[in-house]
Image (cartoon, rainbow, N blue to C red):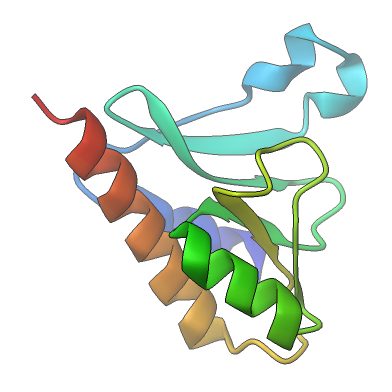
Length: 114
């Protein structure tokens, strides 16, 4: 799985917009690509240092994944309860990563749809 595959997948969902919003905090964060639905983040990754995809998830599932999968970890700058980083190429399949991206989209869209 590569950056373009993930980008295309995220953009295939209805109402998704991509931005690089973190460069205003520090230039080194300008390469973080974030996907939004209803003006809220649901997925992100660093285009210059692609080691993982960060998505929003169900708190119970996040805790389970972090305990049982070496390719899943808390993201250092996001809420450990609601966000997880999934690292391709390890003990989580590309298909599972895509499913987590879709679930993240669904969580955010359901919460913020009017």
